Length: 157
Image (cartoon, rainbow, N blue to C red):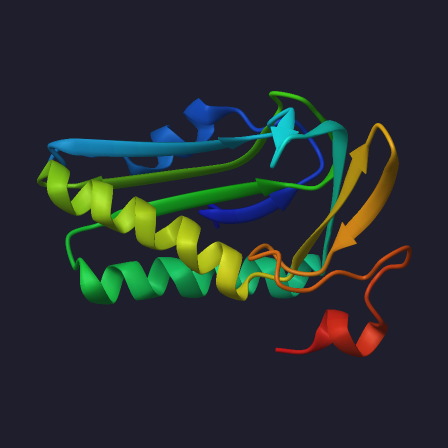
């Protein structure tokens, strides 16, 4: 069975996501590519490290695909998120959505990245010039200082 929603520790190939959603009835394919930026709020990032509860993260990515399907019934979605060490400009996430018309493809893609940050159990560790910090969620509302989340926090659904 072909996977449309996956976590990987390998570089993401954008075309792998696009090819999963291209189809004759789609007039638009919107692709969102999230990359590692060097500066955040004036602080220089050297690299990022992502970790995930993979089985749950893939389940949540599929949930997002199902939510998109419910809101935009003609949409087809593929999402890949990378874990491990990522350098500046590396691709962290790719979202590809095809729909008959462009407005729905744009809206569904934005919905997907917002939902990833809300519900997918992926954690990132910022490595700056002057230290490190685990970010507890992708909305950046929780930090874990110098340690990873507890097992309970990792498996909380």
